[in-house]
Length: 414
Image (tube, rainbow, N blue to C red; front, side, top):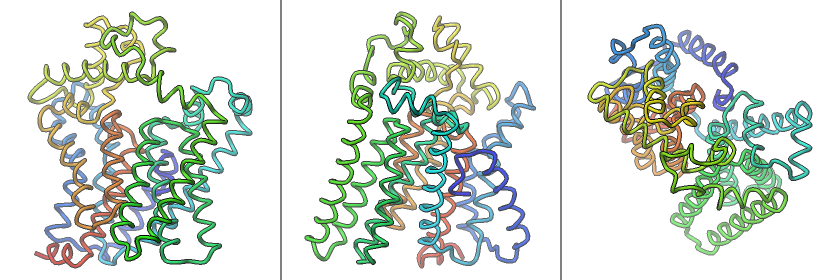
């Protein structure tokens, strides 16, 4: 399920299988004080849906919102409550291999089924739409897809660095290098700015971790030099083949910043600034006003998006109203729907992986925290099934691992 979380239909089917299997293995479950605390933190967004259900105008829509977030309770309930320790490296290696192979298969399918787009991109035309068309062909959204791929890239790099550090056989190191390069290529192909920057920061975090633990600084510096050379070479080769990436990261991103809240003054904003920073800032400005106007209880989960779109209409922002943009920030989204308590729950939920990462002293967990936090500052992934399952699975695995370490295990039996 970890490797298919980005695809709603297979992930939903696997979630049912996961629940059924664990119900059948109920004797393997055990709960203590700290297990329930971890489960409650991860399930907190679902608890908001239940607590504020009365605030929905349409109760059926309120049920649909809660049903989507049900995984935030079911996944930690069965993963965190498992008595046997989970084989962490086994899971990482399986995830690394399967998800990378799935992405290769998706790219191959795209090249065949959408050959007109693929040939156009290879010829260097309409490169601005490349990642979005690819993600849409998979019934996904480019930033959501690249949230998953950025984490995969850093997992692949972590396993590559570990194989090099432990002096594994050259064939194994070569395999790890291939998986890393392929996943990094897919990250660049989907080409969302924040995910690429985050993946680079994640790689640097892994390198700092190995430099910190190194008994031989020369070995660590060699790892750093080789890794950065590979990343730089891959990026410049991709930029050479697809030069739009340089334009996207410079002029396109920061264009028209003087038009915040006045996007309709821009000629053809749907073409010029649809994915630009000025559009996000305009949305955030509007969303913050809606949140402030609906304190302290919010609008209810079912009415949040409608309230925001009504504000676009009332403030004569027709471009934003036409495309019905959501809040594009999970903190603002929860503030609109659930008021002040929604903001507090978002802060608790987003910061929980940071606590686990510090306790585990694990750079991958800390990167997950940073990757998911920053992604939710510019988007709202707890309204998407793939974002919900992604966070529920990994956070539950991190919590389970912490509880099975000596300190966490001792506290969990209090």
